[in-house]
Amino acid sequence: MAAAMKTTQSMKGMRYAVAAMALHACGAFQQPRTTRGAVALRAKPKVVVFDLDGCLWDPEMYMLSWRGGAPFTPDGDAMLAQSGERVVLLGAARDILRQLRTTDDWSATKVAISSRTDEPAWAAELLDKFRVDDMVLGSCFDAREITKESKSSHFRRLKEKYACDYEDMMFFDNEYGNCREISQLGVTVAFSPEGVTGDVWAEALAAFPSESIVNDYY
Image (cartoon, rainbow, N blue to C red; front, side, top):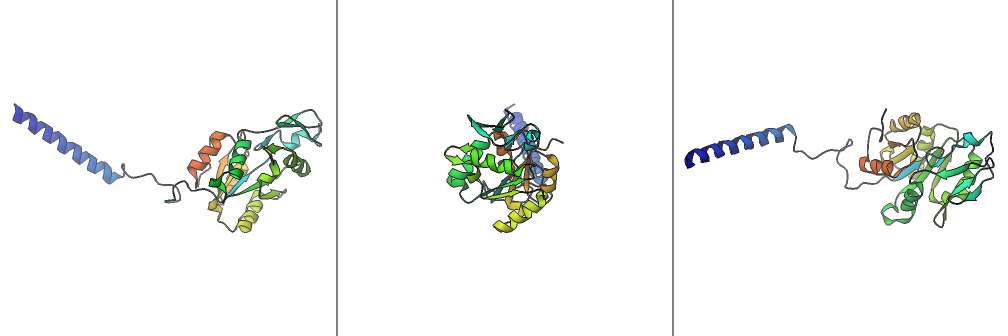
């Protein structure tokens, strides 16, 4: 009886070993790969770029154009437009910008704006009046591309300015068309329809670098 049990266990062990070898040959035990090959652990983008309207703040400037926008007055953490509407920073925008500007982990990263807002003067005023702790919001950015030109034009200039590859850049935008346009350049893009939330930020960092749009549910 004991000999028979030992024989059975031995046969089971051999079957498990053969199955494991087959799985290994198929790649089931291989480490996951990024879409752009092996990258250093916790790699960070060299340039992080944010859209403004509907991404960093709400409402978008065009929504205020016929009701009254500037001048804006502080109203707690928000800004009050002449129409009486409150302009607020979305999601985790304050926390993310604070992290980018004040922590050693991000000291080598540049932060930029890419916006085609209908009211660039109003956007400039908000950048001067919103606060991130003791910093003016606008001071959180190293470069501003706020023009009606294409987003691709913005990114071409940013790439040249910072002598980096598109693959070294990360972008957040609430408009899917912009996301698709910039993703095709090779930039890691995060679709942010509800603004730059903590979840979208974390997902983008985990995916970087990525050839596909982060948070793409289309």
